[in-house]
Image 1 (cartoon, one colour):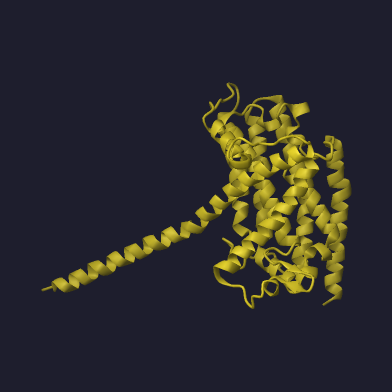
Image 2 (image 1 turned 45 degrees about the horizontal axis):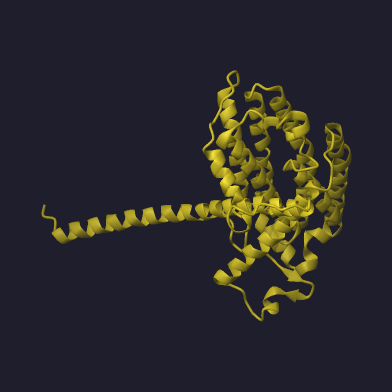
Amino acid sequence: MIIDITEVQTINSFSGSEFLKEVYELIWLFVPIFILILGIIIGVLVIVWLEREISAGIQQRIGPEYAGPLGILQALADGTKLLFKEDLLPSRGDSRLFSAGPAIAVISILLSYLVIPFGYRLVLADLSIGVFLWIAISSIAPIGLLMSGYGSNNKYSFSGGLRAAAQSISYEIPLTLCVLAISLLSNSSSTVDIVEAQSKYGFWGWNLWRQPIGFIVFLISSLAECERLPFDLPEAEEELVAGYQTEYSGIKYGLFYVASYLNLLVSSLFVTVLYLGGWNFSLPYIFLPELFGINKIGGIFGMTIGIFITLAKAYLFLFISIATRWTLPRMRMDQLLNLGWKFLLPISLGNLLLTTSFQLVSL
C-alpha cells in the first residue's frame, strides 16, 4: 500500500491545526475568569482605600497618604506585610480545620461573582437560578468561620464562630424572602432577566420603587451578612479580642480581611442588580444615549458604560455601609437576634405576601 507524502503532510497539518484550535479555545475559556479576578482584586483595593479615606473624613483626621499617590497603595503594602509574616498554628488546635476555614470563606464568596452581570451579556454564567445560587453559595462562608473558631482551640475564637453561624442563619431568611419577592415581580430568578425587567420602564421601573420595604430589609440583612457595624458581633474587639481571627497570623489573617471586603462588594453588586436597575442608567424621561446624542450604544463603548454604571451604583451602597460603621453603635447579641427573627422576618414575609397577592390580582 503506497501512501502519498503530500497526504501525510496534509493529515499532520490538519491534526496540528485542530490541536492549536483546542489550545486556543482552552485559553479563551480562562481569559474572562482571569479578567474578573483581576477586576475583583482592584475593586477590593479601592474599597479598602475608600473606607480609610471616608473614615478619616468622618473622624476629621488624615487618612493614608504615604503609600502611593493619595495613599491608594496602602492596602497593597498591608497585604505584602501579611504575606511575609510567619504563619503560626495553635499547638492544641485542629490544624486541618484551622487551615481550611479561611480558604472556604474566600472561595465561597468568590464563586458568587459568577452570576453577577456587569453589563449587557457581560456575565460569566447566566443561570436560571442565579440569585438563589448566590444565596446557597454565600451560606457556606459561615461554615468556614465556624471551622476557624473550632480549630483554633480558643474560647474567644469559638464564640466568634458560633456568633457568625447564628447571625448568618438569622439574616439569610429575610434576605431570601426579599429575593423571592423580586423573582416573583420579574418572573425569573436569573440576574440578567431581573435587570432587563427593570429596564422596561426606565428610572421608575427600578425595584427600589416597587419594593421599598424589601429594599430596606435587604439592606439591613446585607450589612448583617457582611458582619459590618452595627452587626460585627462575631469579631467584636472589646468582647472577643478578634473573634474567630484571634489565633490567626500572616496570609491566613489577611484572607479573612479579603473575604470581608469581597462579601461587601458582592452584596453591593446584588443590591445594584436587584433594586437599582443594574447596568441601566436612566434619569426620569432622559435616557443615557439621548443624553450623549448617541442613537445606539454598542460594542466596547456600551460595555464600558455598563460596567461604569454598575460599579458607580455599587460604590454608592458601599459609601452607605462605610458611613454606617461610624454612625451607629454595636448591638448586643440578643438585640441582633431579636431584630432578625422578631422584626425583619415578619416584615419580609408580609412583603412577600403582598407581592404574591399583587401578582395574582394582575394576572
